[in-house]
Image (tube, rainbow, N blue to C red; front, side, top):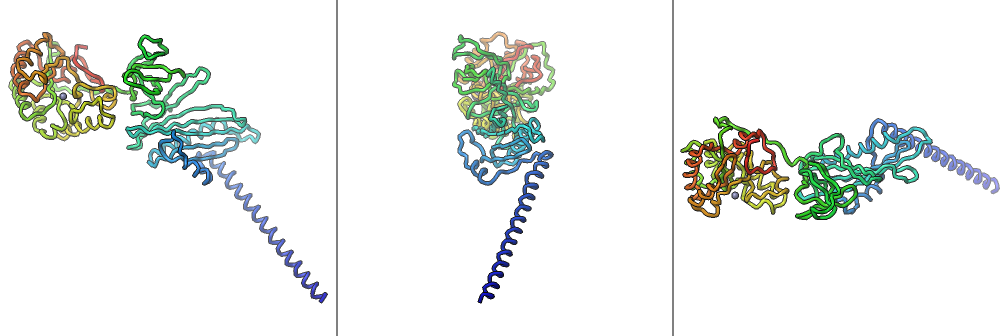
Amino acid sequence: MKENEDIAYSRALVLKHNTLYKIIIAILLILIFAVATFYFVFVNVNKENKENIDLVYPSGDLASYYKQDTNPTREVGIAQMKIDYINNCNFSICYPEVGIEEIDESILSHAKDLKRSFIESYNSEDENADIFYEHVDYRSYIDPSNTMRLVFVDCITNSDGIILTQKEYTHVYDLTNGDELTSYHKIEDTASKVSILEPLDGEDVSSFVFLYSGDVLKFATTAVNIRKEQSTNSEIIGTLNEKDPIEVRSGDDNWETVLYNGEVGYVKAGYLSRKKNLHKEIELEILDRGIDPNKPMVAITFDDGPNPNSTPRILDTLEQYNVVATFFDLGQLVNTYPDIVRREESIGCEVGSHTYSHKNLNILNDDEIKDEITNAQEAFKKALGHEVLLMRAPYGNANLKVKENTNYPIIKWNIDSLDWKTRNKTKILNQINKTTNFDGNIILLHSIYGATADAVEELIPQLLNKGYQLVTVSELAYYKGYTSLLTAEEYKQFRSK
Ligand code: ZN
């Protein structure tokens, strides 16, 4: 029995030894695995990161936390986060994923740029080097014209939590086509409270439509004063030159509230545009018809056509005297009467856009204004095979918002025949003939009234007898010394330059 017990005991001992052996092996294996993992994950990845600046995804928990972000200043995209450690540099960035490939790629490349410059400035292989942290947060805004503004707030701190630098980088994207419209950098000088907006990489802060959420960046359309109060008598706290950027808080029809040197100020409404380059040069296209620039000339313009009754009558008269005029036609009617528009052009007249359907552009939103303009553009292209160069706004109404949405020089007039009001041949002629010197002037008529067609039959020989050359608007501008006109600029006459 005792012997049996001994055997049993020694067997148990052997069993115990076996278990112990297995545990030791397991611990050794785990240790080897841990060391290998540590080597590959930290040492190798960090080495790679020194050449390749790729970002590393954080653990699932952190990422999903940011995806649930409901921060009101993050209007666009699902929040994502990436974290990385390189030597003494700790990096974390939040950024939005928009779901548009071009934009998401661009956002990531901007994020990598921030990380790269952080590492370039602070990275040290010295084990005793100070530790630095970069945290990049963001705000993202959307505007009615489907533009997105992404603001990266880049904050670098040391191990004591002292902020070393804090910078804002703004990128503006067109959500329709994925293009990056502009980038700029806000430099805060906390000592003087000066905030400067500077284009990134020397890139031009080019024309773009901006947003309504948060502060809005606008540009001065001309040199303009910033006032302390909402009054032109109030103290001037600063001056903007043409195209200078300024942050706008809010505004009404009279005054825009701006932020200048950390101070709130006011700028008269109408002098700040969302577009830096409101004006683009449009080359004039002139055929040599033997116009003498030294002799007086006048441009007759006809709006609201083409009309199947009176426009052909007006064209007959122009043809009879071998003279030309300018027709500001409506896209909708151009689609209906393309032959009349083609005839206007075939006898040497100029055709311009009077928009698509004669809406008061001043009360429309950006998209509606653009529709009125581009739908007309399509109609002219279809009827004439090319775009037209000039535009006249219905009722002459073109406020700043209209100008921001047009690619045309805006042609007004300085002689109103009032044909739309009197619709009487004699009254139309009397009204026009109140003017004695027509040189360089633009006369407004409408090609939709019989009375206007009647008046034109007398007006044209009268002007010719007085020695005036009848020219198109483009010709008038050209022979008065303008080789090009500016988009969004209003012209109501052309005097010699
Ligand atoms: Zn009109």
